Length: 172
Image 1 (cartoon, one colour):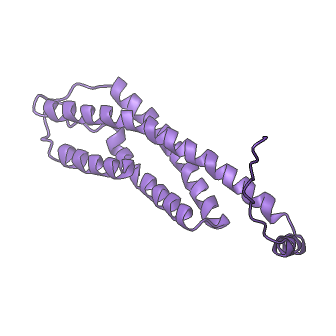
Image 2: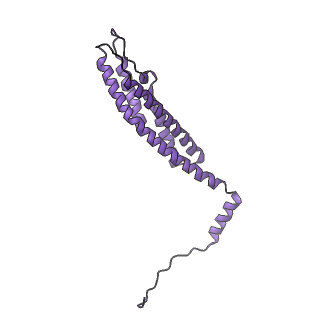
Image 3: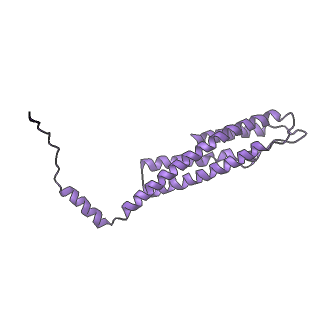
């Protein structure tokens, strides 16, 4: 959902900055607009899809793919946070015609700056759980097939015992 939000905000910024009128001082094109930083939300969307896919059909390949995508999301969120911070700390004077658009674009950047750390922490959390899942899978795969077959056979040979109800006597 965060990725969809970022893509929609990129579209809003695209419409906002494309409508600028060339003024005396030029147009306002921040670094996040030039690098299409908000469009990087597509990486967040793809990561979310791989997490959902790995949760419904957990194979080692899908879990490792989700882990790679989450690490990519962590890196993307960090870079986007740095670029947005640089944009908000540096502000050129713009023509009076474009000042309102520049101000609105900076407010959108502030909103996006609040959502990047959220995506960072979500991706870190899923990365940690992905590592734990892969570690558990690798320890299970280290057992050889004959050992697993023997354990399964022993489990099948053991008779099922149902818990017997306790009988209470008057003395105790």
